[in-house]
Length: 384
Image (cartoon, rainbow, N blue to C red; front, side, top):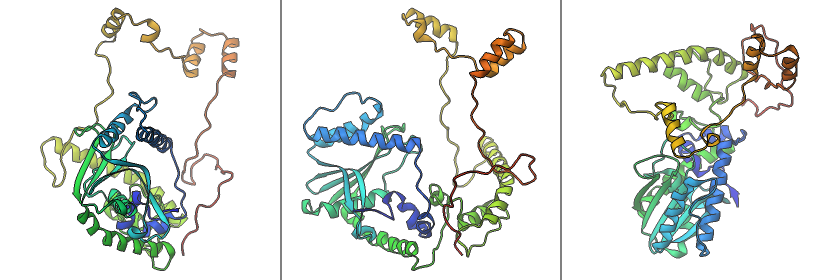
């Protein structure tokens, strides 16, 4: 079975902006340390839940992923409530998005009688994701019901988002109960939107775009998309040289836009600062509200008092303090102050390394020598 061209996780994008599938097809989906950590967390969760299904005990503390306990306890409760669990279930998408051999992978599907639950584990620490009308889970649910139709018919459904690393009043779990009839009512709309996106992906229909903040946020093509550039230009009043008939920006257009970014950044920073200032002074803005951001890092009110308490608790000096060697910059200050000999400074310089400077873009008038990268290929061609 093939992975989906129109993946459920990106459904909010290709349903709202069908041309995005066309623009993204030649842009690699790069990973990150955070994505890799999430992959490991999902693998560990799969391993533990499968062992539970075999009748083995789940560990009370999960080494390396202690927050996973929220997800594991939820799965354990489902088992105790009599649900059959399907872990990392490969669900068919043929009758949902129309891709004949494509599939999606649902983290957890739970079934008991006419009730089905679709559970998605989110490992990120960002904004909480709502389960209500969640399009990704809706697609997984429709695929799961197609896969497990022999256990049905299903009548009630629950979409569940588990975000164990997000602090919330819900304890990291957000669930939305609905009916199977309601989810089925969305199948035709999803299929129709997917048909348009597939046609544009395959080139049988000209690509069309509907850029927006939520739609474009995680789109791999946002840096080269003409429609998104025009959307930003129209929003902030910048004069970007955009030709909408060409979906991908040319190198010349991208260069001109880049040189205007400082003005755009300055404007948006000043705009946001003034908006916040007025809101703090009591002015109301339609659709907006003041909220408290994330609290700062914890620190001791008085380090000596905290140190005295720790000493009284018999915490050793080695456990109370972390030693860190001074930096080469600090050593140079000692050398210039005459506290280190020439011979000592020469020996220390041999033990000093410095990361290579990273490439940055600059106007041609910049006095620095031009840097020529090696081994860089063309990611995609400009569409004419």
